[in-house]
Amino acid sequence: MAADEVLLVSEHVRYKKNKGKLKLLSDKIIWTADGADKPRLSYAYSDIKVQRISPEGSSKIQLQTVLHDGTSYSFHFVNNAYSGAERRDRDEVKDLLAQLIPAHRKKANKDLEEKTKLLQDNPDLYQLYKDLVVGDIITAEEFWANRANGQMSGSDIGSTDVQTIGLSSGFLSEVKPESSGCNELRYNLDADTIAAIFKTYPAVKKKHLENVPDQMTEKEFWTRFFQSHFFHRDRQKTSSDLFLECANHDEQEFLQQKLSNFYDRLLDISEASPVSEQGYGHTKSSDTSDQKNKSDNLFRRFNHQSSMVLKSYANVSSKSVNENSTNNEGEPPSKQARLREMVTYEDLEEETTTKSAVLKIKDKNQFCHGVGVETAKPSQYDTSYTNGTDNHTSYTLKCTLDVRSWQPDLTNALSSDCACEVLTEFSPGGLFMRDTATEINNRGQQSVHTELRQHYNAITELLRHFWSCFPVTSTFLEEKVERMAKCLEKYRDIKLHKFISSLENPTCGEHLTKMIDIAISKYQNLQEKKTKIKLS
Image (cartoon, rainbow, N blue to C red; front, side, top):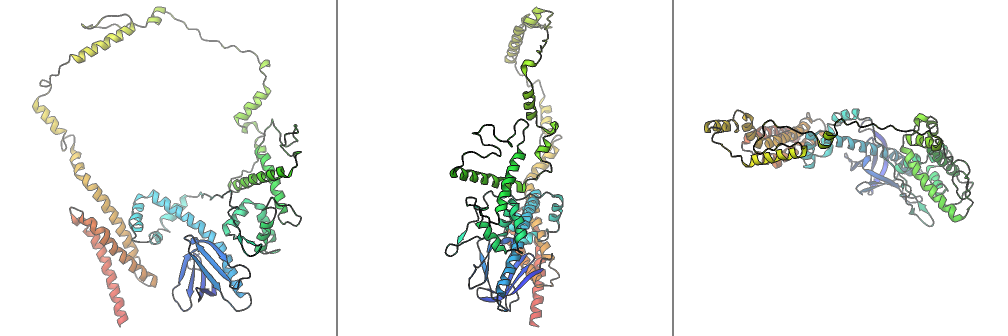
């Protein structure tokens, strides 16, 4: 789909009492006043948080879009071609927005994840993003404009798994009604809430497909949904309730789900309870008080709500738990141990005796006192012992006395000439440390080289945007080349001059300044040509 493809045009739409046209493009919504060339309003579908319409019976047929930053825009439809024309125009815009807003919101979230991953995997690109976008040199849209079809598309090929956004277990409680008139409540449903209801309650989605729009309108369907026993489980069931079958179907499904998730060969909870006081399984409890029924229904509703939320995003296998548990090989070890414990009786087992190994000692004296160590030449501090422990003690004493009585003789160890030669060879620049002098000299220049590379990447990125505008054949390219020229001047005056002034050798940054000057000169020549054309 082309970026500027027009999906819908509504001719008679007012904004702040000004007549104009409302256009829905493939990626954004714009409003243009009559007689104007440029649109006065333009914002993307992903920026829209919710859309609202005027209540029934209102004298004005309006549609309001609220953005994520809290900004709202109200459009007044004033088509008087025939009775109901303005309402038809409003509904067409509303229905199309209901489809476009969630689609572009998911696309925006996916694009954001791809951009974040790309910046994390590429440190140079992340530094370039901080220099240009965070430094307020260019906008984020301009930064990602030429990378949409390059790097991001390549990263999208490698990532095939898409993480699904989960649902809040209390999303229905967040749909709070608003008072509208006497004894009337109004619910504002957006596309995300409706999609969440359909995912959580497939039976409601089935009813929607069966009745809308053949049997009733969208508004009538959701009105009956919020009035039904299915939404208000504490109300009494009536035969005219459209969602009565949905409630019964969900209760049976929830029960089957509980039975399928719990399967044990030694316990069957599907039959009647053997003890009357215990009410598990299909058998109802003898206590039929209203208070107990209300509490049971409340807990059952909470459990079913949570299970349906988890089930809507879980990967359900094709085989049930009952089928898997029929094979002993698929049973967990804990269950196999329980089965073995139930069929095994200790009284019937044969007694088994374990034979221990016999320790055979040839020389008991050597085993008790250890092996004696003989010394070749005992010194004056040595004493011969046959006991192993005393032998180690004597050797420790001898080493201690030798260390205490040692006297260094450095003059006879190494001559002064030889010592000076060794010291020279191990000094920076010597035979054994030839690379050390170069490393010390380059250590201070390493940070300069890194910063120079960062400036070079930032300037080449700006110049790439600048030179891509030539030849200038449209108004958009004229605006972009003017904007890029100002960005280059801003970067040169704020960041580049400061960096060059801090260098010991300013000639290192002259080529960067020259690149910017050539681009600025090209822009000035373009402006002079435009001025001559206007004067002629």
